[in-house]
Length: 457
Image (cartoon, rainbow, N blue to C red):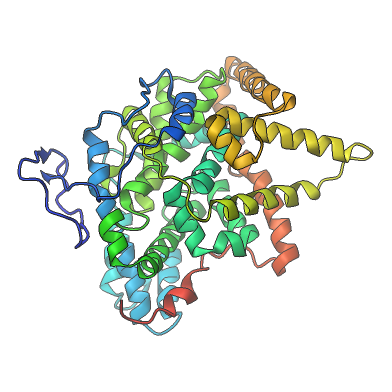
């Protein structure tokens, strides 16, 4: 299907005279912003760790075409429907736009008298996912997502912590917004709230809790986009593209999705190829809810791997906030660990755990990134043993799959959401209750700051 509407930013340059017609978009692709993309060799070890055996990882920019070529073009695209809703918020009286948004999300657009055209357009987009995303495959992908071993899920958290702390694009946006530095606990709770419900039966249905949380996260991205653009200015956009662009968001589909399984497989866990495809469809649907254009949603596991390889190959150098974000991340880890006491050997146990976690950063990110995020020159002996332990854990999980009735058991396990993130959610809930009295996740942190910008600009 040809996608004609792609909503390029006004600062996007024209395509080259000899640029071919992209078969999906039906138009020539625009060039990437002048300051991007640039090959970053620091991420080559992380690419090898994740992608060896799936693609031929080279210490250079990967050959690009298809969805990766469109990713360069879509650095000029934000989220047209939700960006318009943010402007609607600014136009209406304080808090009335948010209330209307929440009413439509909870009860349906038909319950709103004369809804603004921005809300109509938003829900028209949300309620019409690509035809190739089917409920059956999304549901099966949810079972697969919940079945990833703790080793695979932990590896994903380590990888995405590296992206946030040591990647310039995400780190620059997160650091500039400042919420991670100001209120790490509540931010972490909202992250866990987003993740924990995703695989639960019915959670991604139109009125399911995971569906609504994803739409709220989409709103927060759009709110951050307008604030970052205001902060960084039009000259920055002309050089780097739109903040939190559609291309960058699309990279989250494989990074949060199939990367889990790829780590698990690297550790010795057995999956069918169909599992990879269905998990990709599961996250492709989540990506649609989050506002990613159909042209930038990977239809297959193969396209997802292309996005992964390219995204990590062009990871921007650490932002000016990298040390501060690293300190906050370490402080959060220490806070969680301080909530657990081991009689007599507490200090020794926590030291070993720290060494284990640091070892996993070296294992996943390589020596350069491992040094940067841990502040140590190399993993300790305990840190070097840690990857072998998670490999054993992943292989042990294979036994369950060999016992008849595996899929029924796997389906039952997701009854209350993601079993791994449930533990994290409980821990962050307790910490948040201590700090702010248990306000809980609201996904409304940016509302007042956007309203303070006024109605123009």
